[in-house]
Length: 252
Image (cartoon, rainbow, N blue to C red; front, side, top):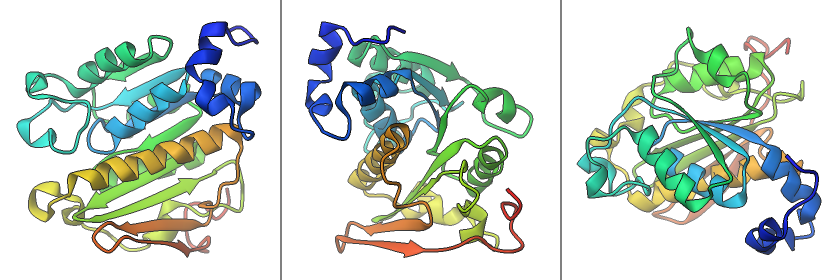
């Protein structure tokens, strides 16, 4: 990639280049960045949308699911014409229409211990858009191991949780420090618990915002906190937590 922005790029990204925290130097960082999104659903869709529009150079998307009619109310990339299609293929096609400059790498598989190293190794930042704690803890373990920054999101009913872990810092706690006991996936089950569509969009866009802050090395004020939001009461609060002595991150 060229070290200078083209006239077209300057015009395309002009509304964020004008921000004093970004400028042309910051935009070049965004264009060179590589972000992996795990999950192409309610969180993954708005994350991918915002990041491709911002100019992220490479976006990887991991999901083995197909679009169903129940996805459409909260998964913003999909329409009724996409039902039955692989989510990652639909996202790739539509992202290329939004921003042809962004390289899209799709993984039509479920992320597991067997394939996670191969999948995450070439990305700078990992975004969790999964709907189960097994995957979230797996991403936490391997992002910590390979010092990848990790942005975690969870949604249920009217509620959202967002974490932003800078695993290049030895002081940063991890997801296991917060969830010290076993957590049931039932609380993330949209089928039984329900989810208000805009909750997914808002939480996903906050995750995308945290990704861009990481790329630009802006203040990460979620390093030792969880952001908890409730859209029924419009209550937003940050709760601090610290490294635990018996956690997997204690010696990292």
